[in-house]
Image 1 (cartoon, one colour):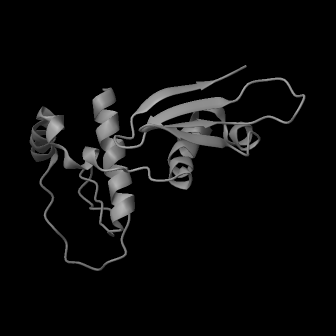
Image 2 (tube, rainbow, N blue to C red):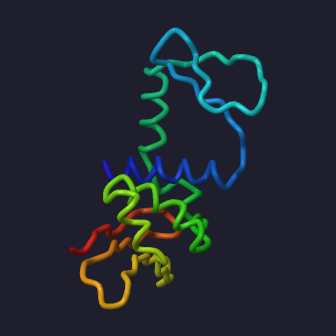
Length: 145
């Protein structure tokens, strides 16, 4: 399950870095809904869920073949914050996480460590996230009390 999440996260991040506009359609209904569309192109035939299951199993069969994992995907602290904030907001609440700004971010080898901060003389905990800059794997995620 973690490998699947990491793969999906890599795909999302890769699409952000490549800058390509794309059409995303839903095969759930007869109506092809375009979710993101900046380019007018003719409608393409959808392959269906069975084809996607087949393609997904082939992709995931050997994750070592993924070339993208060799490149650095999270190159700077700004990119890191753009990736982790939505996750933190969803888990701990946007108001809570924003109150922990400024964030403290450091790179240790291939892992980013991001932590929230508290005002001086205040009590409580902050978030801690460790994420690999090449694979985007979340190695650690917690919040103190």
